[in-house]
Length: 190
Image (cartoon, rainbow, N blue to C red; front, side):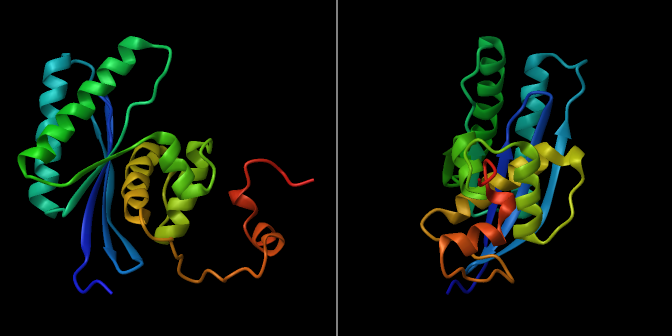
């Protein structure tokens, strides 16, 4: 068992709204340190936004002294301009982490959703609900970017080990697991 907690900084990049979350992991215990969003006003040009992102990530690193850095990879959509902007935001956040020689891990949105909910196609609401359950916190629906960021950190913490929720009971078989976890199903059982 790990004696000192490992601190993970999770980032959900964006040029107008960047989600961030800091997670403490000790053994299999997950503890939320903070999660929030950085909202960048549209009056700033692209390069000013990137500088604001860089400064915020640097500030988070100074404040929380994470051991590891996890970030969500840009998804491949139809809008090339949006992808480029998102890639720049991600690159700036990674550059800030590199400046402090933090180990960096990148996860696809599908991998994060699969890790948190068991369904790679889960919606933001499902991710938020599982974050609440795993960390035993209450979120507001407006915190989707923040819950996505902390989900990235949780996903990173799960790599190489199976998550264990407090109060979770082991299931004897799949039927018992499904009946006890209907929220984790991607479609209703017939």
